[in-house]
Image (cartoon, rainbow, N blue to C red):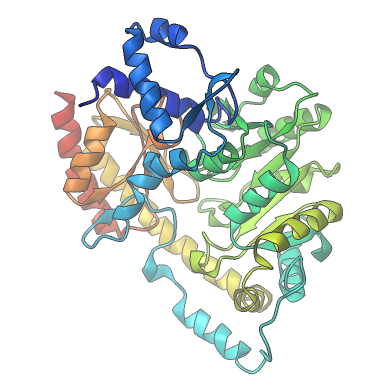
Length: 455
């Protein structure tokens, strides 16, 4: 039997509550009567929606408890748009990819990499397991680099991880309890939302302005006795591109320290500044050990290396090292040696200069393309670093239809609905991956469908 639109609407709304962490595993969902009243539909519509969700393994009936969110929500995560609809198209030939948050292939430092591999050729005698916290020369190189950049840390305070995402997963599973409240920018990076939600944590979105998340909004959602943390991307935020001001950083740090709210600072875009170096990191301003810092080479060098790190207190690093060892026995030994040679040998700074020059060219071209084609239908702010432009359409249109039609035209972008609810007009565009001529062509094709869907 064909499902009704109303049934799909109810089921979709319930999925969204779970995906956003508002309804956590084990939580009892509202009764059929309450849902029917909220949606102004017959109970039969609610029953049909709940049966479909039970069939999909997203909710389950429990004797004496009623209907609850299933403890295993992986089936839901696998069906979300961010996983199911955008990823398969990224490798398709002929696609103009305006969604990819990484450096273009033609910016990859092939000559530098060959030099690094040449240096290592006579130095590697074995590739056994490294120390639990990571290859010591790499930890020393990262500590030295961070210290020179204004965030003093010791090698013993660094844990090497297989990319920033693993770092976030280790923090979530190793330090935060089931049911913790995670405060994060609204909107926020989609994969971090999935990480928290899959571990049964509730999400609290914090409003932002042009200086970053609003410190006063923290006061409305956080109580000092709660379990949880603030997760923030202060530099060239994903997806909005916003750079948090120094004043705002101080306000947030002061509030979090006085209210016992730990901070997870995801700073993987810091080195991608284009106009001027960003303000000091939250970690550099923290004297109480309240900030856990996540860094990575994925955005500035290569995601394939899978090299990231966590900087925190020695005791926290020790705990997370134990958790990581139970997961994978350590990050690739070869990748760690390549990264250590890169950072320690001075090549990284030379590479960053080239990366900034290329991104500046692409940002300028992207800005010109948007001004030529979308100035009458959308608004946006050009970021001072990173990859992303957060564009808001002037009219409400179906982003689902726009996404489908654009994809049929060979254009891939990220609709704002991937990142949070309430973003029906928002689109995230990346200028870092596509060539300027591709970006231009992609925007021209999108404009055609924006106009068509606005009628």
